[in-house]
Length: 466
Image (cartoon, rainbow, N blue to C red; front, side, top):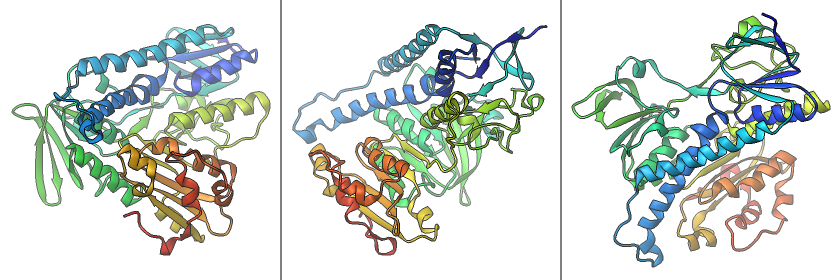
């Protein structure tokens, strides 16, 4: 079989793939974009878009339930129509996916090919009965949910984030294994929409990467919503119970059993690299299957790049987009940008959300640098008081010598938006003194950020947010 000749092949139509394909095509290259499932990848189809749309419906339900706190009579109590909620969820995802398809079809020199891509050699891939060859191949293959052996061996149907939105009825009693961001976001949303949610987590506390006081704000908020938690759980066993799936586990020396109508397993993600034929291409992976790259996202095989979740350098849509910018700039414009030193930034979209960039308090204390910190409790933020939500705090960490931002953790109303001045400062090298001098709009939550920055003190003497 004679391979088809292309200037570039992009494998995977998640966040980075379509944008990179379009930019290469607009630069005059003949580009094949290969996708084995649906355009848009995890974000559009099973991740960010559907989950945040679901969370929006849950937030409305919660606000209606609190209406009396604002002097509004919303009785009789409102109820959620879960089928209608899901119709909206799927409509938003479908619109995004369709819009992406229309845009890609409009770009000259770019062809979308549906099918599984697998390397034949270092510059050739097979897709069904076709073979495609190009001097440049870009891997944007993403990740999928981990399905642990105890779940697969049970013979009991369970949900993952790939199948969660296939449900058509609200689970009456949802068991979630995994107290990470996905489990907490979906758990709180389902609880607010009428499900009884139980979260089982292996660690001794939720969100162990975060400062303990920040994680406690999230846990307390979900407990107030009615979510139950079992922490320090181990030795899981899933079986059919009398009315539905039954999950048993060890908690210390005690064997605990909880029964529900559905089980969602949300214990992490793994890269989609096992069936790509990477050995044939000379592309190396690490012990977990993530593709090894240098700072410019070049793999161990010249002419092959890896972008997005599967390179292990940030499992977020925004880092995938940044990967695209770095690779496109290097290939087309000779830029020398790198992912090395890129500070992690992300949010957990619970209510309140937790947003983070850079170091946590523990991480900053281990750097050996003099560290300044400040904490602003939301009870001191008038905009939060006006909105009736004073949960949480804002924390900033800075280098005592240079004034550079080392990290920030905001867990409060609109944290995912309010943290961006710190994201920008850390990305551009702006000092806390410079940032504190910028006037903010009143009345906003953000206007207390300059006040916070003017009150930084040595970490050892910092006051807790309580």
